[in-house]
Amino acid sequence: MLPAIVLIGHPEKGMAVLDIRDPSIWFRQVTCIEDGEVPSDALVVGKTWDKVNKDGTPDGRFRDNRERAPGGIRRIDVYESARAS
Image: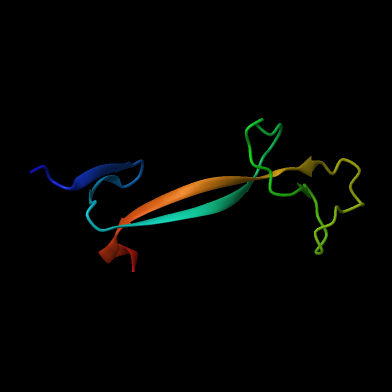
């Protein structure tokens, strides 16, 4: 019988061994602000500006206040169940 593990690489923490018989998988969406053109396949989740008022509207004091497109990035985190709690 083959072992029920998977190796996961992390750029800062190195390699990890994960027991895949009892995993916890977390799916979540993270919002980031794109600088420049938004990719054609991006999920745009609203709009914002370089300078905003407390209520989220554009600050009219700045003539060059560019509109930005917040994009939704999907993130998947995988843990062993014992580590997820």
